[in-house]
Length: 192
View 1 (cartoon, rainbow, N blue to C red):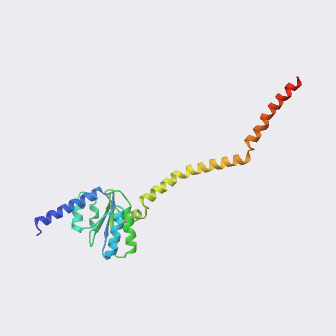
View 2 (cartoon, one colour):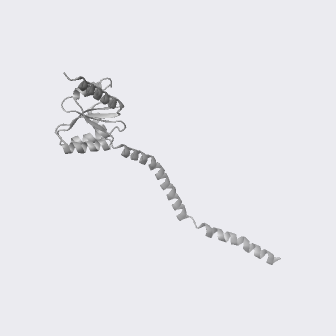
View 3 (spheres, rainbow, N blue to C red):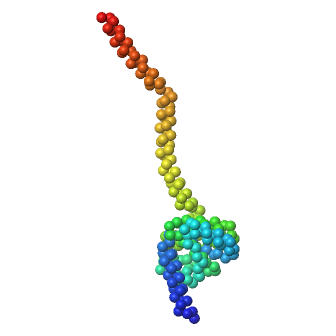
């Protein structure tokens, strides 16, 4: 039987995992077996840089932490080696990074995931992994908004250039009109 100190430490660990899960907008559970220390270090670095928390978790502790979160449907994937990757503000980072890593490592596999407090299917998890980063999405949206304005500016510029090419020079056309009244005034006093 474990000592009271060990039980208290495990309770705190479960409470911390529970709190992290409830704060997270997205999370992925993976089977991490069979990866080297160097690969694990590189993966953790990439996840950390993307703002994703990644922890190896005992299945029993994760199962206890999932109670009351609405994610109890993930209990079925809690077998074998388990790690949890969660993000508080980036919906795609954990799925994208872990899916890319799983593609290059045969023994590493995604087991399940959640989004906004709901368990998602593996198909949705794969689709989420294929979405670009937040910065790329924002750039794409900005380009979509900018495209009509840029097209309008090009049309106005083309019209201005076409008008400038086809119209006679304005100062040359006005010069003879100004000279004509002066000539008439000069002739009029001479007639008198």
